[in-house]
Amino acid sequence: MKKLIRRLIIMTIIIGAQISSAQTLEPLEPIYGYMQTSRGIFFQVASGGCTYPDEFFVQVKRNPDIDTVMLIREHFDLCKAYIPYGVTIFKSYDDLGIQDAKPFKILNPIRTLGRIK
Image 1: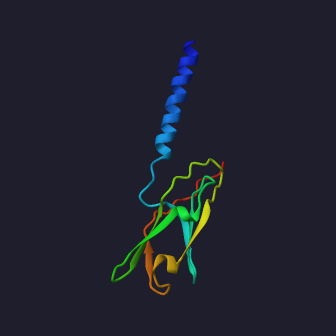
Image 2 (image 1 turned 90 degrees about the vertical axis):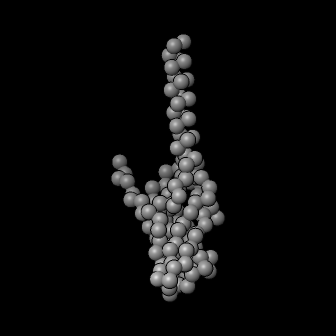
Image 3 (image 1 turned 30 degrees about the horizontal axis):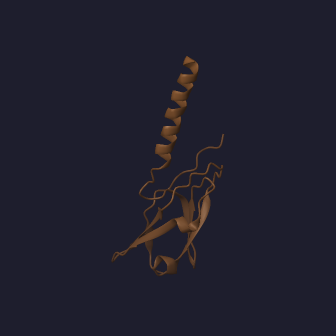
């Protein structure tokens, strides 16, 4: 009986920790990288299998020297699929409201890929 109670307590603690850690979004979505094309920007982001482009929005801050671009995730991806390289999200320059010839800086932190064991 004591073992059962101990296991229930441990399971409750583990589940509580997973829920609390899964529901905290970072202010800026860490990205694996990005690629600028003539049509827009491709962002490579982490995914657990339930990541969709419409769950992201891009905030652009206008500056005289250089505009800044931030990719922000609006919804949690609580799926548990193994997708080591994440998924690609595309945002066109029209969506971003910036000119493709004007320089800009992406403020999202770059996430490095962990070693596959």
